[in-house]
Amino acid sequence: DSVEAEVYHGLDIDLQRAIRSNELEVHYQPQVDLADGRPIAAEALLRWRHPTSGPIPPTTIVGIAENTGIIGSLTFWVLNAVLRNAAHLAKEGITPRFSVNLSTRTLVDHELPDIVEQALGTWGVPPGRITLEITESSMIGDAERTMAMLTRLKGTGVELAIDDFGTGYSSLAYLKRFPVDELKIDRLFVSGLLADRGDHQIVRSVIDLAHNFDLRAVAEGVEEEDTRAELARMGCDLVQGYLISRPLPEREFRAWWASREKGR
Ligand code: C2E
Ligand code: MG
Ligand code: MG
Image (cartoon, rainbow, N blue to C red; front, side, top):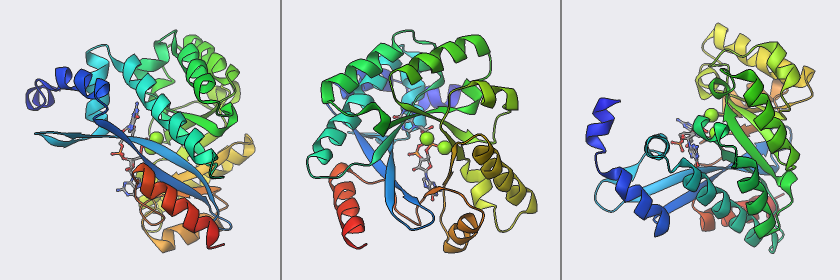
C-alpha cells in the first residue's frame, strides 16, 4: 500500500543489488513428526538485513519483487540457495525435505516449472525432497490456469502444499482436482486451538480433510506444549513453530538437526 511504498521507497533498487550481492539469506524452520518428535522437514524463509534500514519482512521483499517485475529472479535465487544447502547437507547425511514458498505472482510465470527443473538438475537434489508452498488465495481466480501450472510443477517431481489453509475459501472440488500433497493449517487457528471452540473445530476439520484426501496435515505457529499435545491427540502429522525452533541460519540449522537426530 501507499504507506509501505513511502517507507520502503528506494528499496526496489536495493533489492536488485541485494540479490546480486548475496545480501539476502534463507533461514530454515524445522518441522517434526508429531507422533515421535523426529525431524522431518524444514521451511525456507527469506531474510534480508538491509545495511541501513535493518531487517525487512519477507512479505515486503516479495511485494517489492512482484511490483518491480523481479519476482522471477528472487524465486530463482531462493530455490538455488535452498538446493545448494540441501546438496551440502546431504553429504553429511542430513536429508530433510525442504519447503519453499511461492508467491501468487510466480504462479502465472510460464517459465516457473523450467526454473524449478533447472535448479533441481544443477544441484542434483531428488525432486521429492522439495515441497513448494502456494497460498490458498493464489489458487482461486483462473482455476484452469492454476491447474495447468500445478500439474506442470508436479511433473518436475516436487511435492505441493497449500499454505495458510483455512484463511481463503477453497472448494472441496479444488482439493479433489489439484495435485497437492500437504495442507498447512494457518497459525491463526493453531494459536486459538485451546481457547476458542471455533478454531478447534476448524483445525479438527482441516486434519480430517487432509487425511480423507491422503494428504499430510502440518500445523504451523505452535508455541505452547499444550497446543502440541492436543495436535498430537488430534492426529496431525507434522508440527512447526517456535516451540520446536525459530527459523535458523544455515549453520545453526545444521547443528540443530544433527543434535536432534543424535539425541534419539
Ligand atoms: P508463511 O509461509 O506462512 O511462513 C510462516 C511464518 O510464520 C514465518 O514468518 C515464520 O517465521 C512464522 N512463524 C513460525 N513459527 C511461528 C510461531 O510459533 N509463532 C509465530 N508468531 N510465528 C511463527 P516470516 O518468516 O516472517 O514469513 C512471513 C511470510 O513471508 C511467509 O508466511 C511467506 O508467506 C512469506 N515468505 C517468506 N519467505 C518467502 C520466500 O522465500 N518466498 C515467498 N514468495 N514468500 C516468502
Ligand atoms: Mg509457508
Ligand atoms: Mg503459513
